[in-house]
Image (cartoon, rainbow, N blue to C red; front, top):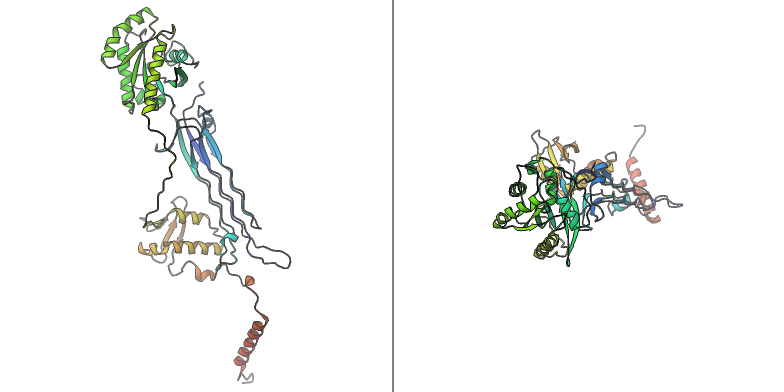
Length: 479
């Protein structure tokens, strides 16, 4: 059973942010020292990182569910919660990250290249961070934001300079074993090679890698046999080598027809027309193979191919082939654009971008979508009236109520914030401005006000007595 896996579906979950803490500082002779609730910790990210020591996606095939750790909640005494630990997942060089619809999210090439597959949730603010001149003693804290849940597909495309393509049993595995130090499994029956083999070849001052791409037969590009599973490993190669069997025992095959069939499959797969080709006529150590090679060579050269006659068994013609491949690889490397330093791309927000949208749906419900409103809803403790009022204030300042009016919303209409599967729904009342009438001056506590001077207290008491005397003036209890 093969242990090579080059395509997996991975289910990743980032860590949740820790909740903020609502706390009041207390000590002897100072029972109400002000809010001191700490912030919650950030949830850990799930990060894919290229590691040269990893060559297969087998680990994720057996364990496709991965989760980062959550952030810790804040505590009293202005102690913030600990951040969750990032989960770093090593992947092979050449891994492509796609969503379930097949859209490419990232192409990871080069040691250390990384991609954040799932972002950890923000930690909630404690009441110490929410305090302000108008809100001196918040009696609430914000909840932590849940981490991202993502389903991604990882596809491995082998990073090699040269790809050996051809029919099963054409001698590709034997050729790579003598060109390099690779030790693939070799036999004389079709589909011996079930995984791409990689070998490193040194020719003069040039060192390059060669990949043996297995399973190409007629119909491979449409999913027949194993070809479709491994054709992706040809995409990154700079040079294609057609390995043709000159000693095949099948009567309906010959090198020219084999070449035409493989070229048709490569053309159907697409994207490989610009790669230089070399033709290798293998197994010339067999007498009939040598004769056939001499017969078809003029036709191949007439098509514009550079042809090499080799024998992997007798080690004939290998030196010339390895140096010819080295020249083509060197030319391909020189033609590549030089890698530029990492650039920071700034994407400023449009001037007219409000950060949210209001859409009236067919059933009359008004749905509010946007990163800020949806995050604020997730951070709100709806069991706390003060927290609900704070959410209403934020939405009002963002302009949600104004946009609802423009969209035609009336009192009593249903409003939903968030996606259909996870939304907060309420009846909108435009006359209640952000809940201020219901909650009064939220966050203000007379116990935190500075004490009045003694003279002021005496004047206040005298004013209260005078007011009481005026109220009873002229009152006759026997009337």
